[in-house]
Length: 379
Image (cartoon, rainbow, N blue to C red; front, side, top):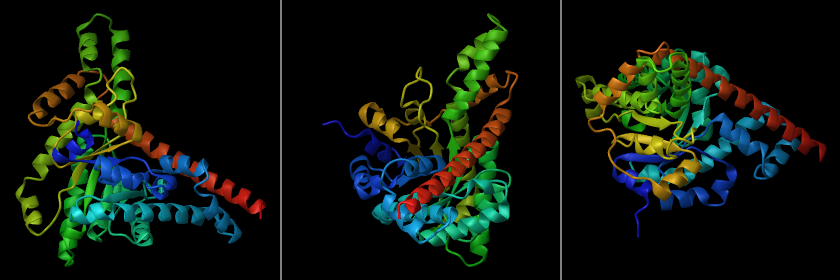
């Protein structure tokens, strides 16, 4: 019988995480089944996922009814709903956390997206969320914005695990890793235990190809038949993976320096790159492209259910990172010949990502408010 490729990912040093959560999959045992059968080692969530879960289905009817009868306002109701789901998922994942000595087994919970540019507000909310869930295997998601970097450092220094999200550029990835190291150093200076703190750096992938491919096709239209157009055509579907592979090379560099080795000797964990946005959006590309092409040791890949199902069915596991940094840099060097640089694209994607999560957060609060009103009217 063919071995489940998702299990093989774990054997290759990459942890498969599920980028999806709703109450029904926890209460029905689906999450536990995926952990047992697919080797799932973690779960990520975001406001978009929660908005869809709360807006549809009956899983939240009982709790929403109780909250409505108690007169709980929408924002507090949202906090209770989300906290309960994250706590329940953390409990299901706790055996993974224990078996891996805290390397895996985490569920991620987002800081309110309206705090993306508020450092102090993010630090305060991160601690509040971590304490509210009350489980060691919850990671608080903090966006890797400029204002988010000092919040990451302070939150790590306080002993709270962090998933740094919405990272698109190699430059910003390096800044995130440095913020993590500074946080560990501050934690140690206070007598804290670095073994109790884990972190991942969520580097977004497919959205980069979506944005870059559109710019490349525009270049082909503007300069048909030219060498520039030929370069643009040769880069289609390659820039996102190259960008991630260069980030991985930076990870290897940062976490091999003397500064890191000193922290590691004291029990600190590497901040692993987590490949996010790994569902293939362009049907021209293989549906497991952003899994197969980013397999490497000390990484995480968080997949939406459909991508996970596809990889289970026909994914191929092989080390995609070994020796690939030079070729990846060459792809980015070629892209630098285009009119729009990769850093400019990544900066725009970060802003769009913050706005998208904020829009979903507001829709989520509106959905909770509507359901509370409906439940209240039925009293």
